[in-house]
Length: 452
Image 1 (cartoon, rainbow, N blue to C red):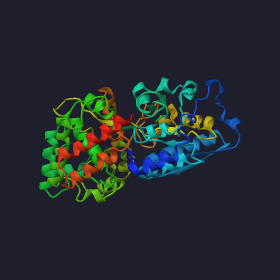
Image 2: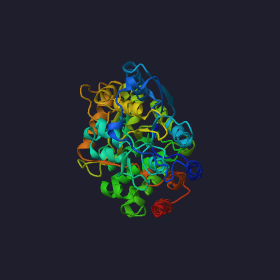
Image 3: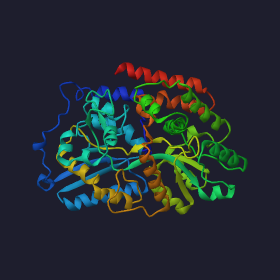
Image 4: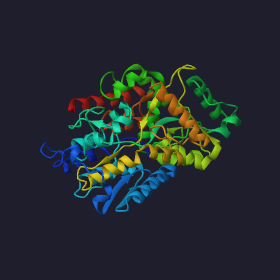
């Protein structure tokens, strides 16, 4: 996101229902977008004539914006007959407007469509996105990307299952939700980056006792609490249990470790470890506040790293979340950035596919590194130069080696941001218990499972 810059679904259930009702025609069984045959696909962009390719993305901050700007200029230089009409919005704003745009008569050609049941699965169900399997046969994306990453961008045509079915997008960047820390503040407090949760709890108490805000945390959009909860959850249970839970393949949100994670978040709020009145403060302002010195620590995604490196220089550090015990492998939410998808009504799908192939090529991974980002695949010739990005790259390599990524919990259902994120806001505000919050999460997940 992120875009969150953030991740997850933002629209309310009512908005979702309204949009899907508007989009019922393209989502009907007789009007599903159909893959072209591979031999009918043209990869010769120069022969496509004059084309304006409208692209909607959420890359509005720092190096992320520079990365897309650079790739767009390179693509247009290679193909002067193509003009890219780029529309950039923050993650939250993109999620609020994308459904309506996709259901209209003149949608964008290429969009960043968030993974999960709340977004991509709903777009696929409504017939709003073009399956990319034939284009994959031409461009060979599945030969370059690990199966696990391709699965994250795959959905069955009926929208009922994510992680399998057709391919609907290709991603450029990798993502980790980890722990940022202010190096100057840690040094003044006599602390080191925590390696275990016990060390982290002690660091929070020390920071609070010295008059520092322990954790920068803004939660107006509900998703921040969901991510913070997920980080704590990953530290209390195993990665396979989290994966099964989110994808609806086993377990319950009311299981012991899941309730314990909510209780830990509640305790942090009561102990004053979080930003005051976080539910009234915007998520995208969190890294801005942190860069200004508000907070010793900040949990957040690597999509914030380029901007933080620019604002804080060598004063900011990044590590994976703490381990349960020193030396143990760590799990945390992550995987890959929002995928680039082709809309079902695009009049330039072949050019759109060539564009996606270009901006996710090995050369694009080099551009990702050059602009201070984390490429989803190893860049062929470039290495990060900024200290923060070196730390991010090291964390990504460690997480990948241990197969330590878990899915974002907003993937659980189309309404989970409200069904779980809303109660988490109440938890942080001290108005709901951990048990009540996790019952609400389970009720939402169970209801979504029944509708599949």
